[in-house]
Every structure is written in structure tokens, then in C-alpha cells.
Length: 233
Image (cartoon, rainbow, N blue to C red; front, side, top):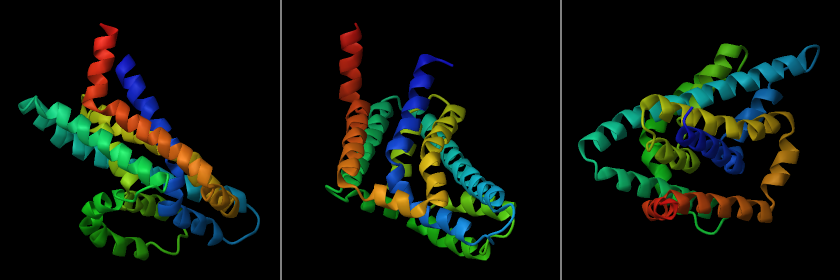
């Protein structure tokens, strides 16, 4: 793995880890409900774990699929019009900054971006209701696969990052690492929803994660890249 890809994958993982409190609001409820819907008894923990892993595997898989579709468009466009590369970096950086402002609860402008995916979600959301209540593992995977298309500013922000990758495969892998970064919080929500909700509501934590996401966004902007290259030279 090249140094550039390692940096992209690790950064995507950290973005997912930092932004996972936002994921709790978007996907945490359905994750917790999967656990609460299971009958308590022998083998409950095993069934709970399998359901949560299935749901999150479907969710992360859909992130990778969306990234592949976005990368097919962005890499083709960047190859034909090289001047688009700085534009893509600017969009990715600004989306991360908007997400950081939202996470810190300083400004919720990212909600306007989330509306872009509303038409797609309007078509997919009825399918999610057909899968409930979850009784089998394949239903959990399918529900997660559909839930990954839920309009989400954090996902869109990271998709901007993924669009900068040199290939469709690396873009999909970037979003997969992002999804893995959100996994600890999502699993924790399934096992201990009340405790995680309390942690999510702590203002200092939200402001810290928001500030770090803003820093990621500024680092992504073309001017920051030029500065790094010039400093290295």
C-alpha cells in the first residue's frame, strides 16, 4: 500500500471515529431497536451480535458502493478536465468543515447538503419497513444496505474525500475504512444505548470532534496542499 493510500484510509477511519456521534443520531436508533426486538433467552448475546454485525456490514457495504459510483464519475471527469482536481478538493474540504460546524453545534448548514439525497431515500425508505421486524440475519444485512443510503452530512463529507482517490477501488476502500471507524459507536449503541446517548450529549466532546473535523477540512483544501508541497520542497 502506498503512503498516500495509507494516509487516506487512516484519515477516513479517523473521520468515521470522530463523527460517529453524528451516526448515533442517524443510525443509532435502528441499531438499538435490532437488539430490543430480539427475544431474551439462551443465546441472546450471540444473536444480538450477529444481527448488529449484519446490519453494520450492510451499511458499510452500501457506503463502499456509493463511493464506487461517485468515483466512476469524478475520476472520469478529472481525467478529462484536469482543472477539476482543485475543485474536488475544495468541495471535499468544505463539506468536512460544514460537518465539523454541525458536530460542534455551531451551525447546521450541512442539513441543506443532506437534502440532496432526499429523493433517493424517499424511494428506498418504504423498502426498509418491509424488512421489519428483523427475524433473520439476511434481513439485518439488507436493512443495513438500505440504511446506508440515508441522507447524512457525514457520509457526504467523506464521499468528497473518497472522490479524490486515484481509482474506483481505492475510493470504495476509503469509505469502507470510514464505515469501520463508525463501527465501535454503532455496536456500543446496540449493546448500551442509554450510556452512549449520554456520552453523545456531552457538549465538550461534540465541540472537540467538530474542531478536529474542521481541521481535517482545512487540511484538505487546495491551498493547504500547496503549502505542504512547497514546505516539503
